[in-house]
Length: 177
Image 1 (cartoon, one colour):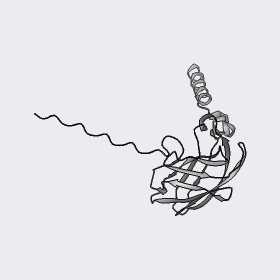
Image 2 (tube, helix red, strand yellow):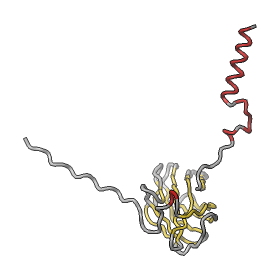
Image 3 (cartoon, rainbow, N blue to C red):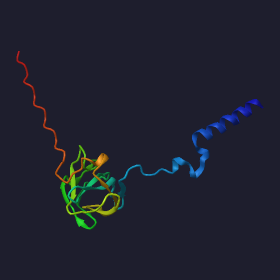
Image 4 (cartoon, helix red, strand yellow):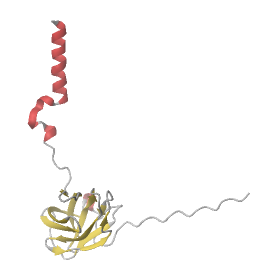
């Protein structure tokens, strides 16, 4: 009898500690997005494009600067042909080809692309439509948050701040014998 009670107690303890007893409303099932940026994917017709943490920064001078990352997880290369913010075509510079698993990064130390819309005039806290046009995957439109140039976005400017590859170290001369 003591052995049966011990086994039942251990089973009840295992269920309660593992969270299995919490059901469909368990807090671990109610996960919310933890960033300001919007996320989306294009996964039809053999495409597998992921858009991560996409938002717009209202930069000084009435400009809008896109922040976020795009990754092509598909087997074939794609290309980002252009970006529109609130229906206006933005100035796009940098890498446009999306090889498999090579991120296209807007802003930051590892940025390899930049999108700026002059004359934006939007305000922080509002939402804007961001449309992206891909060669293979087609078009996607997202409802992105507008942030101001404070906190982690303090360094975001409309100027060309693409990261440049560091130069290769020069070889040291080899000593002669």
